[in-house]
Image (tube, rainbow, N blue to C red; front, side, top):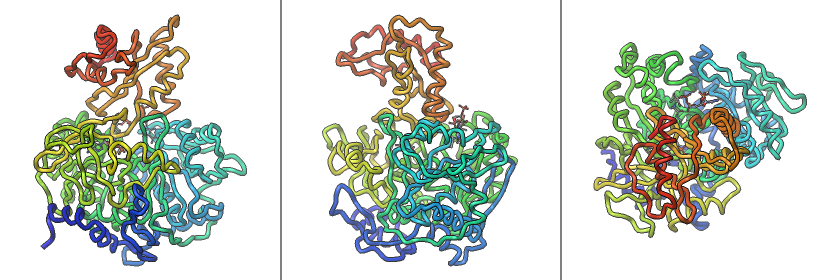
Length: 630
Ligand code: COA
Ligand code: AMP
């Protein structure tokens, strides 16, 4: 009889090497590992040391070799361009091998970085896989980031080449990517040798002679290239995520541990078998896209869907149900915000009734806290289990989840259930002591973390230790606060840093503050994440003007909003800003962002004993009211 959750979890804790070695048998290795876990360099841990493999082989070629050549690997569904296309594993292999050939012909070798700035088209996945095929390290940047953010990533990753497309489409707006890329290269200190541009019919990119290469014609002329063997510990990709400052962190992912964890999670967390249709409605620019649009489903021999659209307006709130019916999706993954958007447009779920969802089995939600009303609404509408699970860019896969492939645990709305096998989750107080059940503290993961989790930050080992491993030795700091209940369920309640979550997108308020503070009329500012019914949180800027500055507020707000959009990007959804006389601070000068957030969210708050001027809080309340909060 198969083991239940408790036994599986216990085994993963007591015999982690045996546990993960068994999971690793499902991957095709060119050379088996010498050591399952090398801890000689702790706190840097290396999984499957000595092992050699190729992630692209395991995600694509393997399926051609093992009888899935004619199965659909990727479905591209784009309501915004009215396009539907599919690629079998054999076709995908051909496309990826040619693209890898293009990269090779441009001098890209194992270990070189390739930056990818692309919309949700199949070529983005092909680009990632082509890098994996030749051992190059990709770094995908989400399309909603502005040129300046892209430039920061170019400078950190130092790519030899950038893969991009002429444009992306946001509902009906054509967003030209190429001018943004040109601007980013202009801003960056590091200059990539080349760019490879996929021309889309909606916009024609202007090409720079000698630097920019046309994707389609290069692929037509390219020689297909085979997979190269890389070490399990070699990097597969870098994915930048918001840190507590304006400088993003380059999360590194290795090849071996990642492949093992991805495959294991597809079967054990999502309960998806090879051949089934799995859809993660996210964007490849986020970790969800890396793990569960591209690598996880393809490694598991699933059909994955690249959907270029939104849950609503493309064309209506039945968009998701149409895709589920049309492709017989069995399991879907998205963020709660998508369901809030659908619920807002179609509260009675009328659109859902028009479609046949009989193949649909489970909905997984993650990316932000799943509020109970949204969970209940989705359950009632779809009549399938709705499973919340908690993880982050750094881990690549679920830390806490209801692992349906092992045993379905009872759902407790508001909790992503229990620790996933491989993760020891402890809740610690400020002194580093494990707190009692039910008591709130910092949610931490005992080292070593399981395969797939970040081995380090790109070129910043010390920063990795400082950011994640130094709070309480022996533990990884998730940055989330919450508690564990008497049944071992984890309750993720808030962040302990300045990270906010806007429509499932992780943003740093510190980074937004840095941009606003650069406005010539701003003396100082604070950004808080105020509760929002649709997006979970929205950034709100409170600004103090330099003395003597007299401005028309409406004009000033427009400028500040435009500045954030220009420097960070539309993804911020930064649209709310208000001036105040001064910021509330403690006597030692610490800005009371938490208190301001409570005021904005109409929550009760205590006036901190250390506040320098309590009267200011009433003024802040009035200012926030002015812009629709408090
Ligand atoms: N390229 C360029 N611009 C982009 C972009 C991209 N790839 N993605 C988003 N943007 C822009 C949007 O057009 C929007 O611009 P606007 O302020 O001019 O309207 C802005 O960035 C904010 O985008 P978003 O947060 O997606 O808001 P939205 O109002 O367009 O859509 C939802 C709201 C809820 C429908 C959408 O966020 C969603 O489907 N989210 C759920 C799935 C998901 O992506 N989760 C992420 C991690 S799992
Ligand atoms: P990201 O790295 O962008 O995936 O964001 C990760 C962060 O999003 C986590 O650290 C949490 O703060 C939040 N998050 C993700 N999933 C959940 C969830 N299921 N419940 C609560 N918070 C979540």
